[in-house]
Image 1 (cartoon, rainbow, N blue to C red):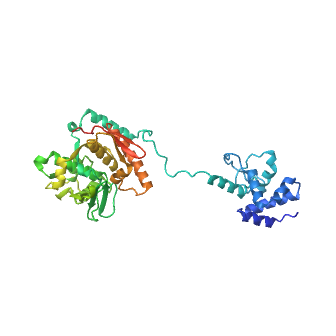
Image 2 (image 1 turned 90 degrees about the horizontal axis):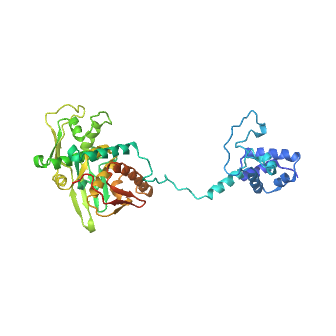
Image 3 (image 1 turned 30 degrees about the vertical axis):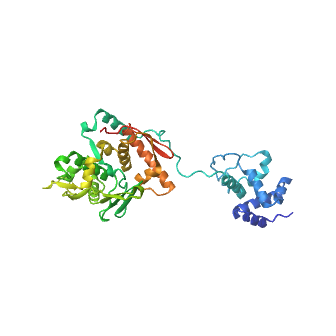
Length: 423
């Protein structure tokens, strides 16, 4: 029976092969047909093309995991095998004929068979594998925080002058962690909502620095209420104010001087409102930090002393909240925690541990409402928030070792624990 090469190539291409592979295989089949061959090859050529291709794949497909490719020297290979793209698997004597014909150029059927096997496998879950909260080794930052906790044990915050305070109202909902476009921000925590508004040209406060400034203002209000009332003295120079905050006076576009100047303007001029809606009721309170202020620093000359000292007059609601309802903190911890989320967790845990008397579960959805301002409202967004929260929680627990907190798949368990700063 005459072998029509072109017809065979056309059928090969129609079954998903490439013209080049079809021509190479057909040429070698024609060469074998014109020479000596046994009945197995003739039978293979007479079978339907799809079955023949499956037989080719079975004859040439390696068993188990394919071996690593070996370098091929084109100078020593015969010209007829120069098209080989994959190594040839070890052949058994029974498969010699089929492998000689097709082993050096795997046919498309073999590739399709491999694809079918992959499709039958269960799809792998996307996203990183959940990390064991306790299994990861401590980072250098966590070790540093642990060392700080040991130093705190030796000398309490009052004795070291590191005690600070945060108004309880500012714990219900946190400031943005990163920059927010525009002049409006809203956070929700159960029945409580926090809104912050400001001139878009000035912007909204965000990050670690406004949290340090807020703690400084609360501390000054509580400690100096009898002598200065709601007035807070910021210093004659910006460098002096930086020292009050416990920060260094580094300049430059991204230095502390520039960031403190920018965040101070954002924080002092923002309008903050707390809204509560328990049982369909409506409660609200304006919690602006400052009623008025006078900042006389020269940001380009932070050490030049101004004639008058820069001052800030706290609003009466904020001043009263600082004096009557504030949470004691260790200021060295606020400075050591790099992440604003970690600072929020530390302040929140210190506040919650004052009031819980039994194990209290907090759902991840509740935590995301309070702390997750920059995460998408999706399942992936909640997973990302949960992973980052656990990461920052480890840092907090390295320095606040008394806190008994257990993260689970569904909730965060708070067990009764001592506050970080005894009352």
